[in-house]
Length: 278
Length: 249
Image (cartoon, rainbow over all chains, first blue to last red; front, side, top):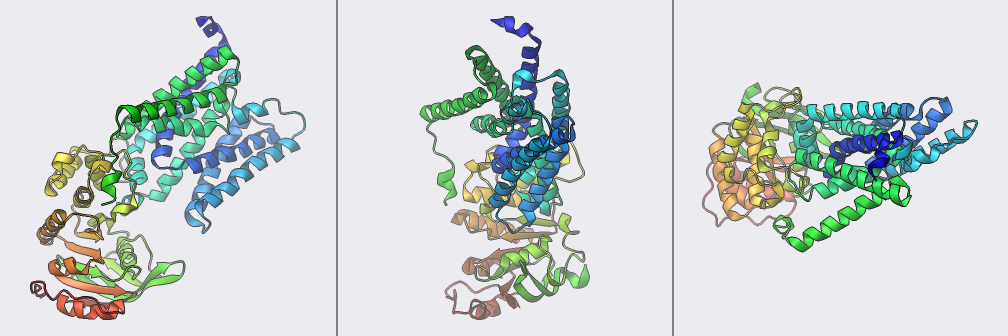
């Protein structure tokens, strides 16, 4: 059974899953505690426009999608903050427009786009070595940023107004965080695809936060959970010949449901909500 | 500091989306005084606070906090927001919350020094919350949370403390403790307390300001209470049965 490990594409797939789990832990934790999963989902879908642009220009779609997604993240963040549209409306519009842009650009590109499907739903078995280096570089940027500004991100995520009064540029850190979300999306794109990527950025951290009240422990735990479900989903999909990305997402979802229900059964502790109404 | 004012405002108009919530407000908030700002909901109390904090630019008029623009004087201002403005489920302990009061933009990686940690612990003990320092904030009661937020504002050694509805979700014990603490702190700093709780505040502050779009009064408490009817636009039940108010000199 371990014989499959000798295949290069399997080794690459496992490396990709482990690299993906780092971003999933660090950025996913912020997405969950700051409750920005909707905007993160928007950024993920908009990034498909960058993939289309890459095709259209005849360049590596992943590389082109990096500045495209980071720029879109800043744009959507600014629109969210300063336009008079409701937050969800701005995101909803750009969400669909990013996808539409990708479809149009791919349509206008001569020839056939063979791996289009893998950008939408991921194909971890087809991750080339070169993409692993891109993933490693993006992970390094994400981890270094989060380490340098961990306390700032935490303070701004918790109480933006107070941080602003303390002279911490809350809007800048908000946009910075959205850029990290965009980088994570690109990092995860080949593994899980733009449509499923939001699972990586929410489910492991949503499980993790049931077990810890410390943000950095939440990151470590989410990364570990991301790796576990990634590898478990991969193994399951490999042996039962199922699409890997979708299998991983279902494994994460089932894990969340099982753990939440088990915790409720074991420790029915009254939540702090009772005090809060006072 | 200009004319001994911690905060001075000259003809300030401010609000949102082109509509002023406060109009032509001019006032001087004295240093080391405990000022209560009262007024009806929607009367512009929070707007006034935001202007002092530099979170909102006035559409007209000038504001100076310790002689500087509010944005530049932020290092000297401690802010205690209303409790409903953030997520109680956030994974952060009481100690970590207080520590954010020492955070600075320009320090990367491990931004807190031993001094910062000591200051946070001191502030927690000042509000008698040292025993709860490792609790996640969602596990604290409204009164305990209030103390943590005050500690967070105090640990940066501010020269002025701005509090937004500080007693709205706290138990009577905490309220008593709170006013005791404010009484002690005012020898070291200016304190501005915004509330719609007229009764409690008028017993404990040195000065009262009534605002309902315009500033109806700023000064002594007795006169302030008289002006309340005018500010609210309807008679307010005055609390004449309380012990005599301290005279604001």
